[in-house]
Image (cartoon, rainbow, N blue to C red; front, side, top):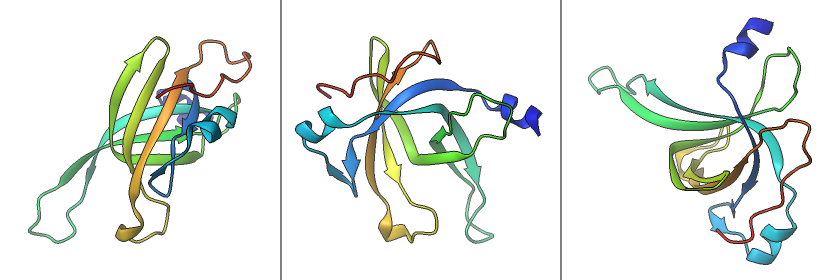
Length: 133
């Protein structure tokens, strides 16, 4: 089981969700948010067709994984479908995509953006929330 945890390529980040239910959060609220520390992966996945005649669908998926620095199997915390890196600057990046909660219907999907600051030292305190995005 510990081998599976080591196979997930990881980038440790402090992340702030910039939207709630698809609506941008106000700047005052974003400045007071405490980021969540998690491992970030971005992968291209191939989904099977919904009907046999349909072609396979490829999607870029960003996923956050719990940040337990131990040998347990990491558990996903959140994910973005159709993910793309929108901005990169210094030690931070902005990921945008579509958020869909587990078990929700298609109409429950909404836009989401994650501000992520790369963490080089796992023992370092959490980053400050973004001042401007």
